Length: 300
Ligand SMILES: NC(=O)c1ccc[n+]([C@@H]2O[C@H](COP(=O)([O-])OP(=O)(O)OC[C@H]3O[C@@H](n4cnc5c(N)ncnc54)[C@H](OP(=O)(O)O)[C@@H]3O)[C@@H](O)[C@H]2O)c1
Image 1 (cartoon, rainbow, N blue to C red):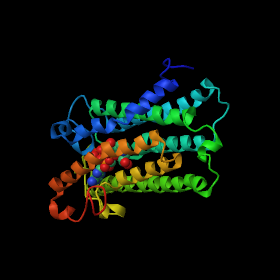
Image 2 (image 1 turned 90 degrees about the horizontal axis):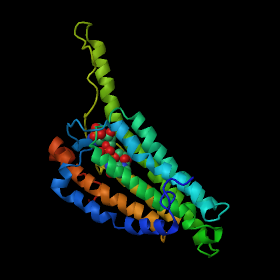
Image 3 (image 1 turned 180 degrees about the vertical axis):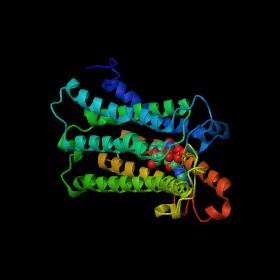
């Protein structure tokens, strides 16, 4: 079923255009370094009270879910439109890894988070656009506009280097994925602990002293300490970059869509991490943050 003629699923020509233009996303992301733009970046720690805000949990589901949905749709429809009967297993595995990541990011993570700050609708829309462009770029490549045979995957060379690249990429992908979840969970644990403390304090009060409604744990922040948080304040970002670098290695370094994904993620998340470090210093003081970088241990 065609959703938008020549665009969803994309024709080869339109897919090539998206892949080409998607490489220039870092130029747009540069704007995030401008303080005035940063002030309207209302998300997480930098969100403000506004009646236009979307509740955090809903915003994350709505903005991230188009990614895997578009990718699955494109991988399902493109092959038959170009006369392919089946795709190599590598295409399917890479498609499945992409969907697996977004089941976590778009569904599990928002649902298990004790609280997520509300978000400006423009941020949600921007992230949704990112998801659609990225999934067209990667989905088209996996759906038949990239490698379509086992020989393509081996770079038409039958040597151990071509064979081992996929396995190496998979290991790096999983290392990054699991470490990203671990560090996300360290942040969730701060609020879970706050919830437990609140519940304990309330249980200790008499019936008269006990408030009618519970306070909640929105916007409770502490300095995280475990894992790589000891060295950097945004290890979950670094681990996500490692994860998608593994994905790029799986696809082969010449795969422009996988390369753009890594570069575009870094371009949009790096300014958040650097500005986030400043936020931690202002909130907790230089001494408490001393010795920690923003996102790359010992460097940045
Ligand atoms: N942001 C992006 O552009 C982006 C892009 C691609 C992927 N991701 C991935 O999405 C995940 C979440 O990203 P994010 O930008 O939302 O990360 P984040 O700003 O670090 O926030 C993650 C979650 O932890 C809470 N939190 C953050 N710092 C905390 C602290 N010091 N103490 C207690 N709770 C804290 C946040 O609550 P509040 O919401 O209330 O602040 C939020 O629920 C990460 O794994 C990241 O790799 C993010």
